[in-house]
Amino acid sequence: MTFVQIIDYKTSRQADLDQLLDRYVSQSQGKRTVTHSIVGKDRDDENHFVDVVEFPSYEEAMKNSHLPETDKMFQEMVALCDGMPSFTNLDVVRDEHLNTMLVNRMFDELAMKGDMSVIPEIFAEDYHDHDIKNPEDKMGHAGMREDVEEWRNAFDFSFTKDAQVAQDDYVTTLWTWTGKHKGEIMGIAPTGKTCTMTGTTVFRCQDGMIKEGWWHYDTMGLMRQLGAM
Image 1 (cartoon, rainbow, N blue to C red):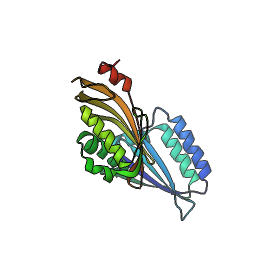
Image 2: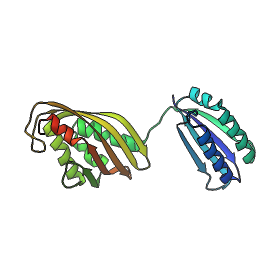
Image 3: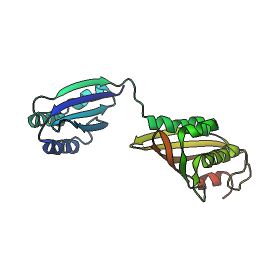
Image 4: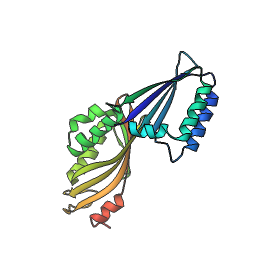
């Protein structure tokens, strides 16, 4: 279970504290178990800060706290703070990235199930699609529908999401695609062959909708499997 520690403190020496944290990151490389760290500054109190530190589990957090580098960093941090920092320890019981959920609806409901009714629910009206297969970018709901129908008419396929990362407005998915060739695609008549390819899709989300997408995948590898090369 993911574990999060919230550190609440006040300091008038934030620049010195930043340098301390940078040194800690460098000195604990290959040892620390922290996976994500955020430092927030209070808009109403310029000396009030909150650090949110994420670990894979409580046990990994305890390993991290016992590192000599961590103990040294904490002692120096206290010396830079106005008073003793407070700590809140949290087991994460719900973790949702809404843009990721939006993107997964595209893969699960639209691409694999062919539910075209979800297009206006997840894609902006002026959606811009960049696909290495297409000589020109597809635009809007009609362009997305056309692309999905083309692939679904050509293959019975599925996606396996191998890895997924969300950052700011972007969600990147590394996937493996497997499809049985049943219809014409890129001028290739149906072969009945089952093909596999890997690829990466990056979606940019805005105002709760998918605004732009980039598709990169092994087209040449697919054509070789279909006997076109």
